[in-house]
Length: 209
Image 1 (cartoon, rainbow, N blue to C red):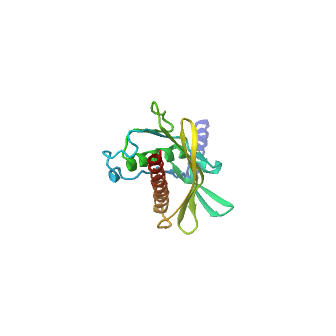
Image 2 (cartoon, rainbow, N blue to C red; image 1 turned 135 degrees about the vertical axis):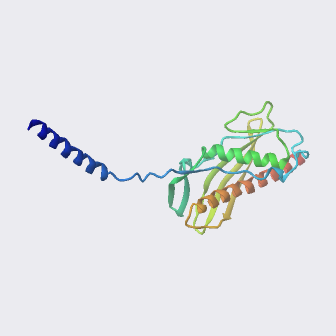
Image 3 (cartoon, rainbow, N blue to C red; image 1 turned 30 degrees about the vertical axis):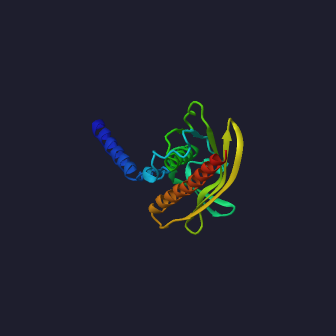
């Protein structure tokens, strides 16, 4: 009799356990997508034409507005309202990504491999240092991205020039993840435009020295 009672208790326990297992919901966790900014085509300029005449340059750590330091892609829906994506993130610290891309762009445009960028160290006897401060770097309404800030030129650790930067790029928009890919591509394009502007100003300045 005792054995039969124990069997009944075990049977009921298994039924209860099975019911508990069956009501556990499936996980709704979604892995985030990570993005990287990209540089221009390396065949844009030939390295046979060194527009810096052997001089080296270094792109310093990029200064970002505090809200841009978040890991998620940023969208500004109104002038006073921003949204941070939890599912679409940068695959590297944004300041490092911007420094990497601008340095690579300048290398390609100016035709030189004599450069380095944060977080790496400067090359020995670095001739030119380039600083960037970005106040805006995000998607805005109307399927556009914007970049607003300044760039600075340093010689012998002294600032010798500063100029404002402002770029707006329109991109194709959709309700899918392709929208975010287009957003990142457009942000990369703003850095290409900025790099072209900096390159022109560097060459122009060196010609007058």
